[in-house]
Image (cartoon, one colour):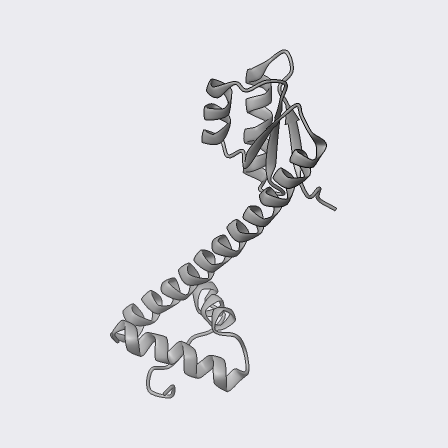
Amino acid sequence: MSPSVAFVGLGESSQHALELIEQIVHEASCPVVALLHEPDHGFVREAARRGVFAYITDGDPQDWQNSIDIVLRRFAEFHDLEGAFKRRTITERAKGILMERHGVNDERAFQMLRDESRRAHHGLVDTAQAVVDGTLRLDAATTG
C-alpha cells in the first residue's frame, strides 16, 4: 500500500533531500511535502522544480493539516488530468493508425472506434488501446 503523502525533511544535506523528492516524484506514488524549520526560498524553488507539491515550516499543527488537505486534493486533480491526457493520447494514436491503414480522415477514424466500442460493449479507450496494441483490426467497410 502506498502512502497518502510523503514528507521529506530538510536535514543536514539539502542535496540529499532534493534527491529524495525527485525520486519519490518520479515514482509518482504520492505527493511530496517538504518539511522545513524555516523558509528557505532557494531550496523551495529547487524542490518545486523537482516536483514537490508543497512545503511546511515548523508551526501550528492545524496549518499542517490544512496544507495536507490541499496537497491531497491537488494531487487527486493532477492524477485525474494525467489520466485524461493518457486516454486522449491512446485515442489519438488509434485514430492515426486507422487513418493510415484505411486512408480515412480523423472524423471517420473516430467514428470507427466509437462504432466498434458500442458493438462490442467496451469503452472507447479500451477499443482504442486494442487498436494500438494490434489486437483489434477494424475494417473501414464494416464499421459505421
